[in-house]
Length: 114
Length: 114
Image 1 (cartoon, chains in turn green, purple):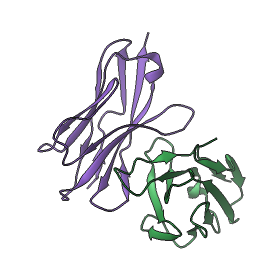
Image 2 (cartoon, helix red, strand yellow):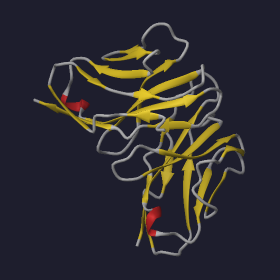
Image 3 (tube, each protein chain N blue to C red):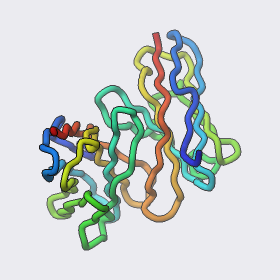
C-alpha cells in the first residue's frame, strides 16, 4: 500500500519497560510527525522531522521520549522506563515540505502500560 | 491559552441536512493554515479541507466548506447533505507561520441520524 504504516498496531508493556514504535512514511515525503492521542482528546504534537534531523522536538514530554529517523525515511519513537500515563495512541504522519503541508496519518499504535 | 478551541463535544444532525462544526483559533502570526480532519471509529485521521490565512475565498471540497472569518478567528466546518458515513470525530487544527508544529482541538463527535 502507499499509505503511512505503523507497527505494531498494539503494544502492551509493563511499567518501567522500554518500547519502540515504528513509522514508515509515504515514499517521497520528507516531513514526518509524531503525535500522541489520549482517549477523548485531539492529537498532541510530539516531534517533527525534516529529512533525518529533528526540526522541532518541543512536544516531547520529557527525556524518556526520543525519536530517530536515521535515513530520512522510517522513524522510530523510543520510550524508556514507561509509565502508566504514557498509555495512548501514538500517531505518525508524513507530508511534503511544500504547499500547505497536508499530513497523511498512519493507523496509529495503541500503547498500554500496565 | 488554547490554540484551537472546539466548543461542541457532540453534535447530532438528521441525514441529508447541513451541519456546522465550530472552531476558533488563537495566533498572533499573520501567516497560518487551518485544517479539518475526520477520525472515524476505526481511528485513522482523514484530511478534509484546508484554509490558508491569506486565502480570500472560503475553501470548499465537495460537501465540505470552511466558513473562514479572520477577524473573529473562526474556521467553522460546514458539511452539507449529511450522510450516515459522516458520523465520526472531527478535529480542527492549525499550523502557525513557517513552522511545522500543528495544534489540534479536542474534537467534536458528530452523529448523523437516519
